[in-house]
Image (tube, rainbow over all chains, first blue to last red; front, side):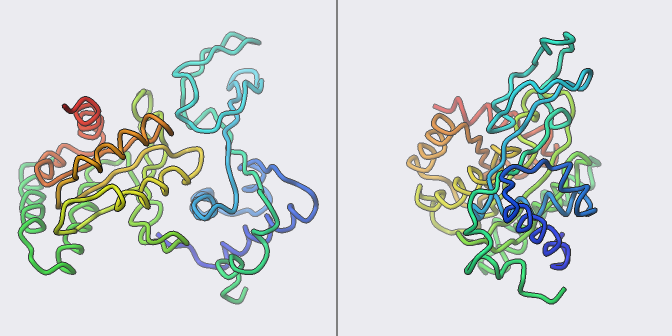
Length: 124
Length: 167
């Protein structure tokens, strides 16, 4: 189940670069594009960051038919069981398939000192 | 699940309950739980035995069950397997509930597999976490080990309902 640390480092470096460049919100899909890592790897590393409090996440609901952004939610559970798109009328069930994970970089504490060891304890 | 597999699970569950060596008991409990997870193709172990700043995390599962209002609430499920001799007090649940709370927007569900019963105070802590933070906790005590042969997909919604409405 564990991932090679070099993969974790790839993600860590991306987050560090983004934060230094002023980004505070990153989409899961853009992380996949920019790191070229498998989604399972990114999912697992992000879980670790969520649990250690380094990043937070929200969910953006997007209409699968017309692509309209239909709001941002704190948890999957907060979504209605069904949402009707006010643009095209599509009925969208609550499902992980129709939300985009948004990663919020909380502070640069993530990139300094104590927590850095998680990602930099091995050579890359 | 075949009758043979159900019997195997029963045997493993009983062995876990009756084991007196704490270390062996813990290992059997985890083996038992992993066997249960493998019954359903809808569940996958994403993380196992992760060391994080607040302690150790036994498992995080990912589920992909479509078109189900219960399961659509939480894509990830945090799991703790507890092999304590004494009843579980609220303070022992704190770490577990905090992990569920902080496991990201795709998680609001925890599974607490324990060989010892929960105290009334622990049940109250679970209820409070549900009412205040929307955290769904499902407890699996030894009485329900054999029912797990039905698979998590089937048994967890029923157990949750039973525990929410317990007297």
